[in-house]
Length: 254
Image (tube, rainbow, N blue to C red; front, side):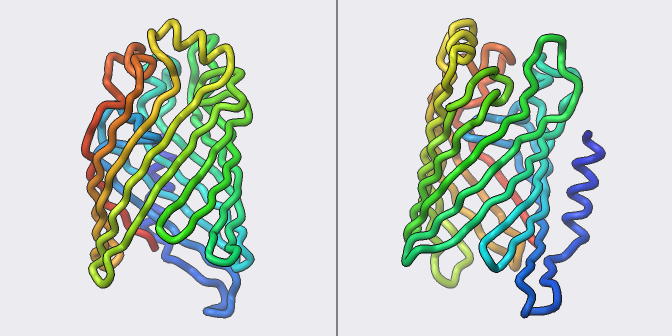
Protein backbone atom coordinates (compact mmCIF):
# COMPACT_ATOMS: atom_id res chain seq x y z
CA UNK A 1 0.00 0.00 0.00
CA UNK A 2 2.91 2.33 0.60
CA UNK A 3 3.92 1.68 -3.03
CA UNK A 4 0.44 2.81 -4.10
CA UNK A 5 0.85 6.09 -2.20
CA UNK A 6 4.34 6.67 -3.60
CA UNK A 7 2.99 6.12 -7.14
CA UNK A 8 0.20 8.62 -6.51
CA UNK A 9 2.62 11.25 -5.26
CA UNK A 10 5.11 10.67 -8.10
CA UNK A 11 2.32 11.10 -10.62
CA UNK A 12 1.18 14.28 -8.90
CA UNK A 13 4.68 15.67 -9.25
CA UNK A 14 5.01 14.83 -12.93
CA UNK A 15 1.53 15.59 -14.30
CA UNK A 16 0.95 19.32 -14.72
CA UNK A 17 -2.35 21.14 -14.48
CA UNK A 18 -4.18 20.58 -17.77
CA UNK A 19 -7.11 22.33 -19.38
CA UNK A 20 -8.35 20.21 -22.27
CA UNK A 21 -8.63 21.90 -25.64
CA UNK A 22 -7.03 25.11 -24.35
CA UNK A 23 -8.93 27.87 -22.57
CA UNK A 24 -12.32 27.00 -24.07
CA UNK A 25 -12.48 23.62 -22.40
CA UNK A 26 -14.90 23.18 -19.48
CA UNK A 27 -12.61 20.48 -18.02
CA UNK A 28 -9.72 21.14 -15.63
CA UNK A 29 -7.32 18.59 -14.16
CA UNK A 30 -4.90 19.44 -11.34
CA UNK A 31 -2.56 17.54 -9.06
CA UNK A 32 -0.98 18.31 -5.71
CA UNK A 33 1.77 17.00 -3.46
CA UNK A 34 2.78 17.89 0.06
CA UNK A 35 4.96 17.16 3.07
CA UNK A 36 3.79 17.74 6.64
CA UNK A 37 5.66 17.34 9.90
CA UNK A 38 2.58 15.72 11.48
CA UNK A 39 -0.61 14.63 9.71
CA UNK A 40 -3.47 16.01 11.79
CA UNK A 41 -7.05 15.24 10.85
CA UNK A 42 -9.70 17.09 12.81
CA UNK A 43 -6.97 17.86 15.32
CA UNK A 44 -5.94 14.22 15.91
CA UNK A 45 -2.59 12.89 14.68
CA UNK A 46 -2.93 10.12 12.11
CA UNK A 47 0.79 9.35 12.11
CA UNK A 48 1.72 9.12 15.79
CA UNK A 49 3.10 12.68 15.63
CA UNK A 50 5.41 11.71 12.75
CA UNK A 51 5.80 13.24 9.28
CA UNK A 52 3.68 12.36 6.27
CA UNK A 53 3.89 12.56 2.49
CA UNK A 54 0.63 13.33 0.69
CA UNK A 55 -0.71 13.87 -2.80
CA UNK A 56 -3.74 13.74 -5.03
CA UNK A 57 -5.57 14.53 -8.26
CA UNK A 58 -8.63 16.67 -8.88
CA UNK A 59 -11.06 17.10 -11.77
CA UNK A 60 -13.38 20.09 -12.07
CA UNK A 61 -16.05 20.95 -14.64
CA UNK A 62 -17.20 24.48 -15.39
CA UNK A 63 -20.73 23.45 -14.35
CA UNK A 64 -19.53 23.12 -10.74
CA UNK A 65 -19.10 19.34 -10.61
CA UNK A 66 -15.81 18.04 -9.22
CA UNK A 67 -14.20 14.75 -8.21
CA UNK A 68 -10.84 13.67 -6.88
CA UNK A 69 -8.60 11.27 -5.03
CA UNK A 70 -6.09 12.02 -2.26
CA UNK A 71 -3.70 9.88 -0.24
CA UNK A 72 -1.38 10.00 2.78
CA UNK A 73 0.66 7.61 4.86
CA UNK A 74 -0.81 6.89 8.31
CA UNK A 75 0.03 4.75 11.35
CA UNK A 76 -2.91 5.06 13.77
CA UNK A 77 -4.52 1.74 12.84
CA UNK A 78 -1.35 -0.28 13.45
CA UNK A 79 -0.44 1.83 16.50
CA UNK A 80 -3.80 0.92 18.06
CA UNK A 81 -3.47 -2.75 17.16
CA UNK A 82 -6.55 -2.62 14.91
CA UNK A 83 -4.65 -3.66 11.78
CA UNK A 84 -1.33 -5.32 11.11
CA UNK A 85 -0.85 -3.72 7.69
CA UNK A 86 -2.78 -0.50 7.08
CA UNK A 87 -0.33 2.30 6.38
CA UNK A 88 -2.23 4.32 3.77
CA UNK A 89 -5.33 6.49 3.74
CA UNK A 90 -6.81 6.88 0.26
CA UNK A 91 -9.81 9.20 -0.04
CA UNK A 92 -12.20 9.51 -2.98
CA UNK A 93 -14.80 12.25 -3.32
CA UNK A 94 -17.22 13.99 -5.65
CA UNK A 95 -19.45 17.00 -5.29
CA UNK A 96 -20.91 20.17 -6.71
CA UNK A 97 -19.97 23.80 -6.04
CA UNK A 98 -21.82 26.97 -6.93
CA UNK A 99 -22.85 30.43 -5.81
CA UNK A 100 -26.12 32.15 -4.99
CA UNK A 101 -25.45 35.86 -4.95
CA UNK A 102 -22.62 36.48 -2.49
CA UNK A 103 -22.96 33.05 -0.87
CA UNK A 104 -21.00 30.05 -2.03
CA UNK A 105 -22.13 26.47 -1.46
CA UNK A 106 -20.58 23.03 -1.76
CA UNK A 107 -22.26 19.62 -1.35
CA UNK A 108 -20.70 16.21 -1.85
CA UNK A 109 -19.78 12.68 -0.84
CA UNK A 110 -16.45 11.56 0.64
CA UNK A 111 -15.20 8.02 1.24
CA UNK A 112 -12.18 7.38 3.45
CA UNK A 113 -10.45 4.13 2.43
CA UNK A 114 -7.97 2.34 4.70
CA UNK A 115 -6.81 -0.77 2.82
CA UNK A 116 -4.89 -3.36 4.79
CA UNK A 117 -5.04 -6.48 6.94
CA UNK A 118 -7.18 -6.08 10.06
CA UNK A 119 -7.06 -8.20 13.21
CA UNK A 120 -9.86 -10.70 13.79
CA UNK A 121 -13.05 -9.02 14.99
CA UNK A 122 -11.92 -5.48 14.16
CA UNK A 123 -14.22 -3.17 12.21
CA UNK A 124 -12.59 -1.70 9.11
CA UNK A 125 -11.95 2.01 9.35
CA UNK A 126 -13.47 2.77 5.92
CA UNK A 127 -15.98 5.59 6.34
CA UNK A 128 -18.62 7.23 4.14
CA UNK A 129 -19.64 10.85 4.71
CA UNK A 130 -21.88 13.35 3.00
CA UNK A 131 -21.21 17.05 3.52
CA UNK A 132 -22.53 20.51 2.87
CA UNK A 133 -20.81 23.87 3.21
CA UNK A 134 -21.73 27.53 2.82
CA UNK A 135 -19.32 30.44 2.62
CA UNK A 136 -19.64 34.20 2.79
CA UNK A 137 -16.71 36.57 2.42
CA UNK A 138 -13.84 34.98 4.42
CA UNK A 139 -16.02 32.68 6.56
CA UNK A 140 -17.04 29.08 5.81
CA UNK A 141 -19.29 26.68 7.73
CA UNK A 142 -19.25 22.96 6.84
CA UNK A 143 -21.21 20.01 8.22
CA UNK A 144 -20.19 16.39 7.59
CA UNK A 145 -22.50 13.45 8.38
CA UNK A 146 -21.42 9.80 8.62
CA UNK A 147 -23.56 7.15 6.93
CA UNK A 148 -22.54 4.15 9.06
CA UNK A 149 -19.40 2.70 10.64
CA UNK A 150 -17.10 5.64 11.39
CA UNK A 151 -13.30 5.30 11.52
CA UNK A 152 -13.56 1.82 13.04
CA UNK A 153 -16.48 2.55 15.38
CA UNK A 154 -19.39 0.28 14.32
CA UNK A 155 -23.01 1.38 13.94
CA UNK A 156 -22.15 5.06 14.28
CA UNK A 157 -24.52 6.52 11.69
CA UNK A 158 -25.24 10.14 12.53
CA UNK A 159 -21.73 10.82 13.79
CA UNK A 160 -20.95 14.31 12.54
CA UNK A 161 -18.35 17.04 12.32
CA UNK A 162 -19.01 20.79 12.37
CA UNK A 163 -16.27 22.95 10.87
CA UNK A 164 -16.18 26.75 11.19
CA UNK A 165 -13.27 28.55 9.55
CA UNK A 166 -12.09 31.96 8.41
CA UNK A 167 -9.30 32.65 5.93
CA UNK A 168 -7.89 35.99 4.88
CA UNK A 169 -5.16 36.71 2.33
CA UNK A 170 -3.09 39.84 2.88
CA UNK A 171 -3.16 41.79 -0.41
CA UNK A 172 -0.04 41.54 -2.60
CA UNK A 173 1.88 39.47 -0.06
CA UNK A 174 1.03 35.84 -0.77
CA UNK A 175 0.41 35.46 2.97
CA UNK A 176 -2.84 33.87 4.15
CA UNK A 177 -4.10 33.77 7.73
CA UNK A 178 -6.52 31.12 8.96
CA UNK A 179 -8.56 30.29 12.05
CA UNK A 180 -10.62 27.14 12.62
CA UNK A 181 -12.96 25.55 15.16
CA UNK A 182 -14.38 22.06 14.79
CA UNK A 183 -16.51 19.68 16.83
CA UNK A 184 -16.51 15.91 16.25
CA UNK A 185 -19.64 14.31 17.74
CA UNK A 186 -19.96 10.52 17.87
CA UNK A 187 -23.36 8.83 17.87
CA UNK A 188 -24.46 5.27 18.61
CA UNK A 189 -24.23 2.68 21.37
CA UNK A 190 -20.85 1.37 20.18
CA UNK A 191 -19.25 4.81 20.58
CA UNK A 192 -20.63 5.06 24.11
CA UNK A 193 -19.32 1.59 25.00
CA UNK A 194 -15.85 2.22 23.58
CA UNK A 195 -15.71 5.57 25.39
CA UNK A 196 -16.47 3.86 28.70
CA UNK A 197 -13.71 1.30 28.09
CA UNK A 198 -11.23 4.03 27.12
CA UNK A 199 -12.22 6.28 30.05
CA UNK A 200 -13.51 9.25 28.12
CA UNK A 201 -15.89 10.46 25.44
CA UNK A 202 -15.14 10.10 21.74
CA UNK A 203 -16.71 13.53 21.21
CA UNK A 204 -14.30 16.48 21.28
CA UNK A 205 -13.53 19.92 19.84
CA UNK A 206 -10.43 21.09 18.00
CA UNK A 207 -8.94 24.51 17.30
CA UNK A 208 -6.32 25.76 14.83
CA UNK A 209 -4.53 28.97 13.85
CA UNK A 210 -2.45 28.99 10.67
CA UNK A 211 -0.34 31.13 8.37
CA UNK A 212 0.86 30.26 4.88
CA UNK A 213 3.12 31.98 2.38
CA UNK A 214 3.03 31.31 -1.37
CA UNK A 215 6.49 31.24 -2.97
CA UNK A 216 5.71 31.06 -6.71
CA UNK A 217 3.45 28.04 -6.31
CA UNK A 218 5.24 26.44 -3.38
CA UNK A 219 3.16 27.08 -0.25
CA UNK A 220 4.96 27.00 3.10
CA UNK A 221 2.70 26.74 6.12
CA UNK A 222 2.85 26.86 9.90
CA UNK A 223 -0.13 25.95 12.08
CA UNK A 224 -0.84 25.46 15.74
CA UNK A 225 -3.57 22.96 16.61
CA UNK A 226 -5.06 21.76 19.88
CA UNK A 227 -8.04 19.73 21.10
CA UNK A 228 -9.87 18.82 24.27
CA UNK A 229 -9.84 15.13 23.25
CA UNK A 230 -10.24 12.63 26.10
CA UNK A 231 -8.16 9.48 26.80
CA UNK A 232 -10.36 7.75 24.20
CA UNK A 233 -7.71 8.94 21.72
CA UNK A 234 -4.68 8.10 23.84
CA UNK A 235 -5.27 5.07 26.05
CA UNK A 236 -5.09 2.50 23.24
CA UNK A 237 -1.85 3.88 21.82
CA UNK A 238 -0.18 5.51 24.83
CA UNK A 239 0.32 8.64 22.73
CA UNK A 240 -1.25 12.06 23.20
CA UNK A 241 -2.62 12.31 19.66
CA UNK A 242 -4.74 15.41 20.26
CA UNK A 243 -2.34 17.56 22.25
CA UNK A 244 -1.42 21.11 21.30
CA UNK A 245 1.22 21.00 18.59
CA UNK A 246 2.78 23.03 15.79
CA UNK A 247 2.82 21.63 12.26
CA UNK A 248 5.03 22.65 9.34
CA UNK A 249 3.89 21.98 5.78
CA UNK A 250 5.12 22.42 2.22
CA UNK A 251 2.68 21.92 -0.64
CA UNK A 252 2.70 22.35 -4.41
CA UNK A 253 -0.17 22.27 -6.90
CA UNK A 254 0.23 21.69 -10.63
